[in-house]
Length: 176
Image 1: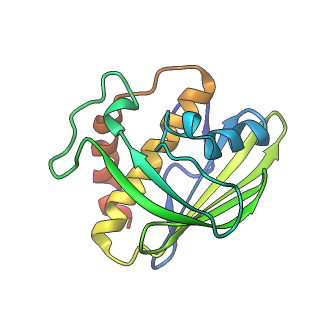
Image 2 (image 1 turned 45 degrees about the vertical axis):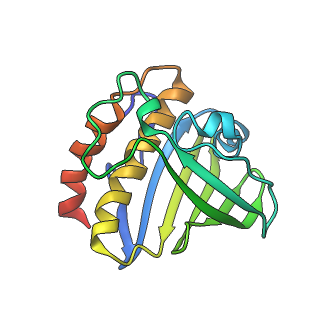
């Protein structure tokens, strides 16, 4: 866990059989966190690049370059490429409080933001994680990406992404 973020729970949790929820209290205002969710140049620093038109029904594409998230990136696990892209569509957009979009061809992700003084509670709910093998990748993925987000927002260098993901993946194997 990054010193700049506070976990509401240490790990994401399955709140329904195919739904993961993970929460973090991040440094900064709701508007600042919203920018990190919606502006491609900021989002690519912790998750994936891709321009979004902020209205329901708008298609977009996210492109991950996880090797570029941290320096060094750590050891990329076998089976993961240097780049991955996914087509999605905005389902709901209520700036700067809620953003929901489809997750490729299955499921959806909802981000909700709530002010907590000078910080923001970010809740990520990822629905439609039908396969256990998907849950054991997505859980540590969100966890590691949110740790990178917290570091970026706090002005510190995050731990090597892939090494962190690999450690978390072992924990999520037990949890999901």
